[in-house]
Image (cartoon, rainbow over all chains, first blue to last red; front, side):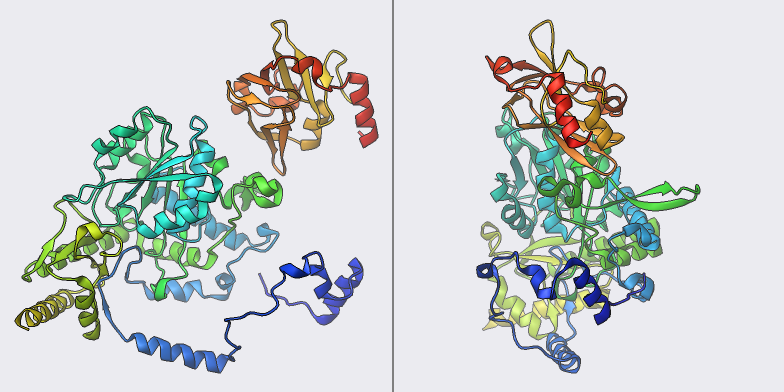
Length: 457
Length: 132
């Protein structure tokens, strides 16, 4: 779609047609006391040259670091073609126009995205994206309450091993809509949620169970046992998954004997740079039986009046412009540009490329764990299998160690003591395919040196 | 003239009510309502056992371009939702007063006599006033 701005004459003609003097008068129905008088706290504007300089200085302050932090955002190699194609003019304005079908190319791309995500998760239908993994998890909980008509309780079981930010966002988003989130404990020896610990919920009215795979610690949950336990009690299963890991692990559509009901996740690993935490995108998939409860847009393939294949928005009766207050959510095409990048990333990588990336990340993380646990005072916290993240325990507080590493150009991981105090001096580390053996050895050598120096002092 | 069977009761929001031999009632939407909505692609009916208040939204009828709530014409407990509509929602279009029924209710005590339902003639007046 070409971007054609309105001229002043266009605007005047439109206002004259509807009998309004000035654009400002269109907002007359908002009571004056609800209007923001001043934007306190927002700094004065900068021009393009000034903002460019400011941002360059801030980026320089970050320096070029060697990062071993994962915890929900993962540094992967992004082929140069991904953003070269994404930023072409035809894609760069990724938002669909109000008559979405006028942008057949955009709709086709979204359709391809939905297909890829549905296949990756082993589910039947995907929407056109969410804001991020955390908000997708919150929306999945709301959706499960709509979809599970056998349950009246709106109680959602959430293992403590689910990303702490996701848990917090779910509560913030949904608690005022009557949802009750209850935390499930984990086994501190293995870092996973034991299916046996669910027995105390037998006979109770529970709406849904959230399962993150791999979980926040990088560990692999027994998804089959958890899923079957839930389904035997008419509890819906919400899978929270890492898209890279799905190239190797069993997809949520195949968990247990029936598969998860809803699968969501953070899409950032699929071609989106870390960029200080965003923008990222979320994804959401489900089974066809629940499609009318799914939020967000869905693009379908159809035939036009001449019999040619084409793409169209479908199942719109769930959406806000038709269902008003009863719409499934206010989510639209959403993170269009990032979805564009992810679709190009997935098509360049293919299933084999994604599987090689996942296998390399897993191998690098094993190498990292092996190297760091050779350092005296460092041990692996959990005994079970992990994907591309693991929890280490140090013999001293983690924060000062990370600070020293940072001054040596290494971001050594995430200090878990604030989130999981019961794990002591715990550190979550991650290595993807972007780390070489030399990088890992540099981390090991630096950690060894500063821990010995501290001991000697 | 619209198709408004004389033996049914109606309300202004275009639902019809039929009293069955066992004292329960059958509820659907009128020929006028299905025509206004167009071809239905999805119908959500309430589960058996749900207790409804009069005027409560209890079902959803969805066409390609619109979705509308259906309101309980009287208070009662749902004894059945029409299972056929799950796979054949268009039955509401083809047979709105027969096979396209939405739900059956056991009226709450006094609900049937107390409900301000319209006769066929009065419902026809509502349609005439709407220009239908």
